[in-house]
Image (cartoon, rainbow, N blue to C red):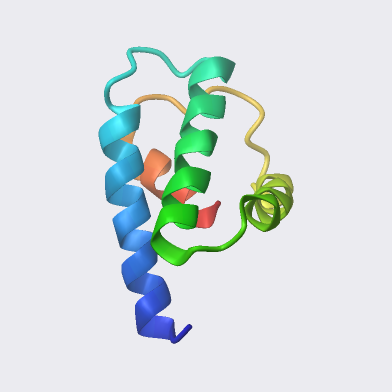
Length: 86
């Protein structure tokens, strides 16, 4: 997949997941898990990549998040960056 296509797919996933995440009032663990599930579903739907392969890469991406031990907060840009990273 070319760089521009990857960028477009990432933007699509971020938009879809942000719509979903904005429907939640809190950023508890359950919300974060639901967001991860939505990210994986969007990637699978948009690319056709096997869910198991997506899950393996998602685990790796989460491990690479820099020191995110607390709540993500309400800042939209932080959520968008986290979604794009994953």
